[in-house]
Length: 221
Image (cartoon, rainbow, N blue to C red; front, side, top):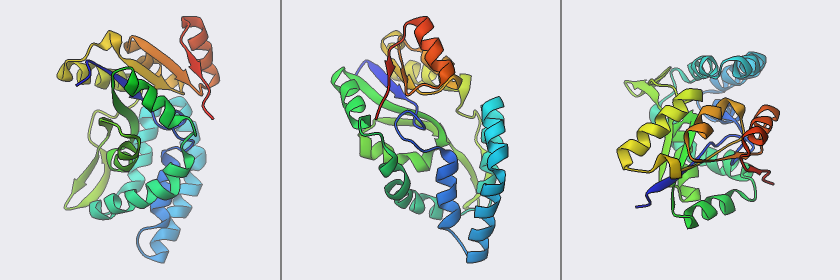
């Protein structure tokens, strides 16, 4: 196996979507008509709150947002994940995403997705892109139903960097030889912990940081 890895954020980096789009798909494709309408409306009404929390505190955003999954069946969530990939994620992939993945593979890297999304929603994407591993949030299930709580630690911000460091230690990878890719300044710690960070479709703050640290900047189409 490669002695180094390329760690990729997903939302905004490899695809144009975010976890709210993913949940909206679940809300519209599970349960009774009344339940679907209620979840869809609840998501729509929550959008302003989502935006504020995401901008201020990514951890609080994740904890608040994933409550919306409470009561959903684990089997149904996993089943819908396959359709969701085909209908939502696959069409939203940047045209150059696969080229970026393939380039990292040719450079001798293990390919790892590192995302605040839920693990079962990322597995079809990881399979499609030919990834080796996924570091993602894991929903807590009791009796086959989602509790709305994520098993700690929540994968976001500094925890992404901690997860990458732990992964490298476990797999015997050279952290200073590893690559990191993200679009958001909220992932600064993730990019700073690896030896070869790259800003992909960066927001204004990350673009500024990348220029200050002389990190490569990629704008995918």
